[in-house]
Image (cartoon, rainbow, N blue to C red; front, side, top):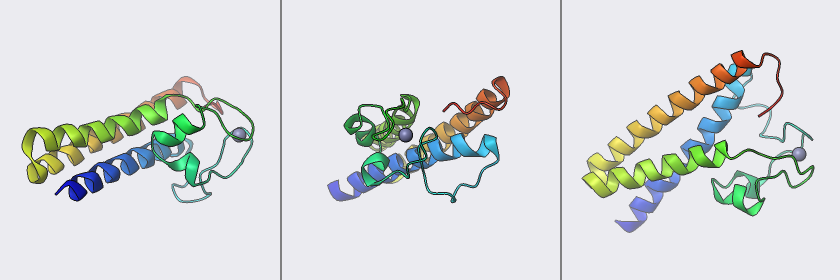
Length: 130
Ligand SMILES: [Zn+2]
């Protein structure tokens, strides 16, 4: 039971990571699958350490390991929020309905983050920040 809970929380964290990718790329009209995740400043392809939800940000101290550009606290915040939504759902309702509520909350977080990404893009047309 504990393994299943850990698995569901991990899935929520990974969904959070995907949400960041989608919120970053969709407003720019970029593909979600190509190219591989990379630093927007120096172009370095991100490795497994960079891609660990929340922990990767902490290990890198919020900066690109190659060029030192700030990654921004929004990405790990979105990932942590997704993980917390799943933890809260399971804690409140148990593993079955709780996981369903957790995934629903993750979906809401995702839609919100992507909408915010489009809003940012409109506010700063042509901006490479993010
Ligand atoms: Zn870089």
